[in-house]
Image (cartoon, rainbow, N blue to C red; front, side, top):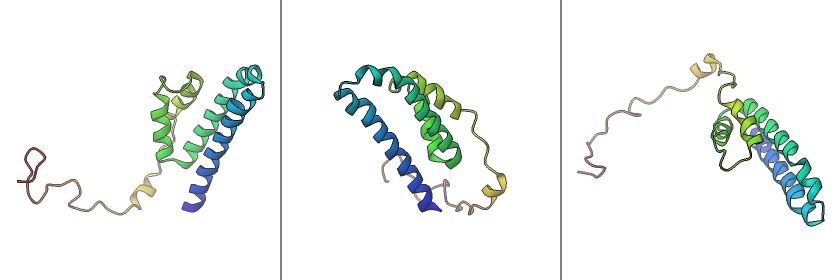
Length: 123
């Protein structure tokens, strides 16, 4: 199960990188700059849609990464951040019964340390 999940995520990102290399580097160097530029917004929107669907299906870190990226309007195009913004509040909740099956938190996790530390240094 974990191996299949890992493989699916790796193949998704490999496909996205190959797509971006083809359209934004190779075709431009071959003289198809106008065509690549004209279709760029639609392609980026499609990539963001597919990432959002993958993140919702896979859950976990992919959702958090999408939420983080949706707030980075200084780095990503507006069409991408608008699509990823759906990960902020439209994510389905986790089933509570699955959460109950998780192992309990150890008693010393987040508790007091055996020896107090002052100012971040050992006493």
